[in-house]
Figure 1: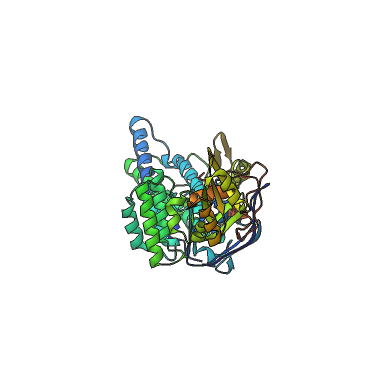
Figure 2: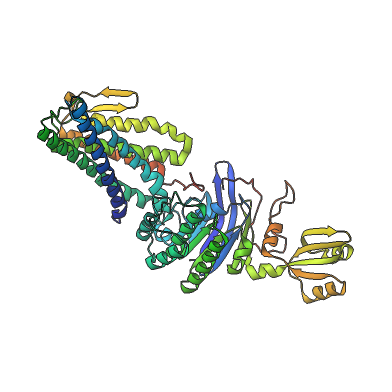
Length: 234
Length: 314
């Protein structure tokens, strides 16, 4: 298989740009809270809700934009599937690393300013500076959110409105990912504590995350393996 | 690349878009694919490009099946109206991926074409006009130098000067790098001179497949007094007849030998050529709701066309 360097590079480059803008905005909000109010906890922790949605739409874009592009350029669905899987497997750690970096930069800022960097939600990690645990938690989450996005996008691409039926399964994939890290399950109108105390430890978490990733890939592949390209612009 | 289609059938749920189409195209020619809206042109090209799997029959390109066959699909390029190859952020992004995925990509030629069509690399694809989007598709299709290159109404939205740039570039590049090209178009008169062979399809069936010059030579207009025109065309395949007072003009399809032509002159009838677009219109003209589209009895179509319901989704 040809290594998906350009697919990966394009997505990494865009993610890095978004992360820089996102970090600047979060930092400004942090300073604003400190100046005009009372800063008692990590702002970055709350802000990490948004990158999950970003990851979801990266999964959507893989199918909606890049699947037709690849097939129209003479690649088979199997070739695209392999390149997309490798891309997700390398992209999710990259996103996770960016979030780790955000926590570390925030820790430095809080330390210099003398602000308390408390966490307000359940996590696999107890402190933002526990780099391996922070990395592991977000890695598993991003894997789940990206494949959920890809799966639901594949269903909508193939069956249009019928793709609505994929939403519960996609949400289930996300739930599995969140459950694997024992974190909090947050969707619009839904906020479900998954009790960090029951988190089964890093190896099992990573194994569960890998399982979620592979399950999502398999379900997505079952939809795109012979999907026809649409005749008309969507 | 040689194309062999045998008994091709494509269904969209309960609608049959292509019905038992059979034909063969030799490598290294420019073909015109003509058909009315909903005739099945896009569906046929989609199957040839591996965009869609056939429901029945066989499709072989370069002697091998197409769908999910990387040895074939990497050598095939279909530029369609849906813009699959260009629907990405900027012009340079579309070029970036084309360069990466197309094995015969000519980067210098792509740059030259971008200039000729007035496209800049930093332009946002979504902000481009319809004509510029079409031009970008043409750039990707031509610079890809695929052994089988197909353009499905790729001129849409392009103004006349841009369309002529496309035709000139296509012909010049084809002469320098011969390959199999299929042009699906409604602008028949504009591209007629480029086409070596013409395929006309209608309602999912092949109506006609001939060399374009042969096709043109078979069409003749017969004009003169109505009774003499009627007498002369008796027994011929008459595609269309118009009357103005006592004068009639009939379009006949089929070979007229020297004796027939002499007979026409002696009867005071005027014989003239038929434009390709007129022939296309007559050959695909529905004769009534129940009338199937098909070639005149003496037209050597390679397929066995049959009528199917038409639909825009094709």
